[in-house]
Length: 563
Image 1 (spheres, rainbow, N blue to C red):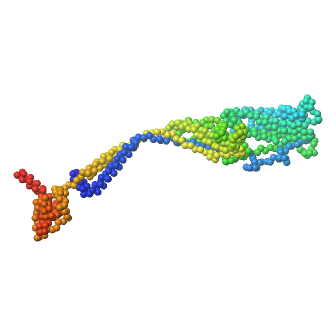
Image 2: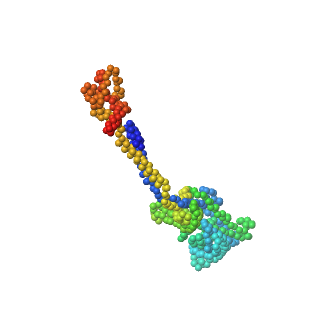
Image 3: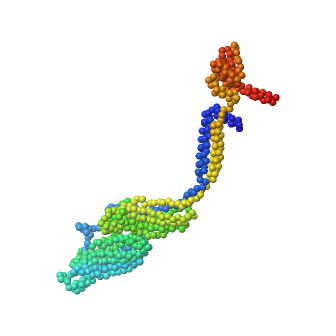
């Protein structure tokens, strides 16, 4: 070990650059080791981490089908309605003298957009007589009750009976002055009272349709307006409901068999052309629709729930509402589907009466006196889902919106009708790194080793001094004391034969000779010997300092002391 230390010291003495490199290198390694130890101790042994235990996904989708009235825009109507030159509907005239008797029929159909339970359908047929003198009288004709959404009723129409009523009334009033003949108008009115259960609420409504008959002196006039369709929207306690009333009158006139000149033999009865109801055209979901052409919009909302873990007690509470608003001014909320409990994937169907909403905006604009013609119609579906999983409960609210811009003539819907929303159940766990203690231990060991190496190198770099022999120390001291006299040279000039070499006993005596002769003292150093000389012509004064000489002298002095 001592030999190694001496070797390091000698290397430092012989190469200062090596000393600097080793000091810097060991310092850099020490600092790097210190940083590594700091990093190891900064690493947490334990920490909390969020982990996902359950992944689930909720997905909703709106859809709607628009049913429009037939027309030239999307398809030609099935039949043209004949009109006269003024564009009014034609009237059919029948001659009184040819008529034997007459029968009137009424057909009614109740069409809900979604299944309902009919409680009762009551039909009342009355005749309203508009007398010649301006009075009115109602005469019951026929009535029936049923629990069917399609009812057909027929009854004879005896005009002689009405003539008798008119005669009696006119006679009592004593105001008939000009003619004995009855000229009046007769309105056949059908009233349908309907009561139905929608599944959430009771619906009560009345449908009224009229057929006008003009009774003249010679002719009987019936107009062609025999059919009536009315779509209505009912707002109950739990939401809205769309349905349609469809009524149609018909009649048959039997002719006098003896009077065949006008219509020809074999023609015994007259009827209007059969009524063919227009086919409602179904249109797919598009961006723009015209309100005047819409019959009904059947909408739906579908919801699905999926999970990567087993789920139990899955319950979904869904509610669909419509918000009609004028942004930043007013809004009204309507319940389309009341809060309903479902389980699993489901689809809810509900009608959307945009005609009603359009008329409502017009009424509100008139009442307020302000507002743009365009309003927002927003359909909101909200699903509250709860379920149990092996890793905890799920309690989420999923909301999806379908927005439409409703103007005075059109309605435009957003094209984005699907929405997907992921969810997860997470938990906090404590994580332990088993490698951290190893990092800390080895960082301490490495730091200690490098600290020792750095101190070793730094100590010897600072305190290492040249290891000199006595002759080297003597030469160094002489050089310092007589630097103006002693001259170091690589090689002394050889002694000539004629030159006398005079040995000198000490270096001090040689320096004195040099001073007295005013000559330099030449110095040649070698590994084991230092030679000094002063040359004065043919005289050469010489002093030699050798390693063995001091050791031999010390030994001789020791032996002599022992003796």
